[in-house]
Image (tube, rainbow, N blue to C red; front, side):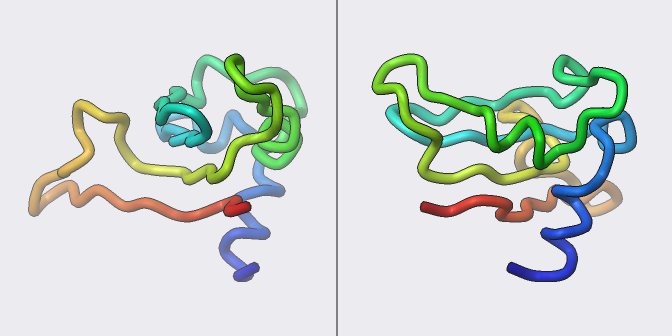
Length: 88
């Protein structure tokens, strides 16, 4: 696990509210972090509690990304980025 991944997982959700989580299990879903913000919760605290609605276990992978599905490509002045947080 990289130092950057550790920093992101320890960050408060409110600090990353403009970004998205990409979660893959039976399907791939995009979750805007702003919908998850609660006082004091970190990205890691939310990621560890994620469960698949179809099959039950935690997701196969979780990434943090700059944009959701609609803006995944980014632009030259606003490039999209993706950071892997969990891979099982």
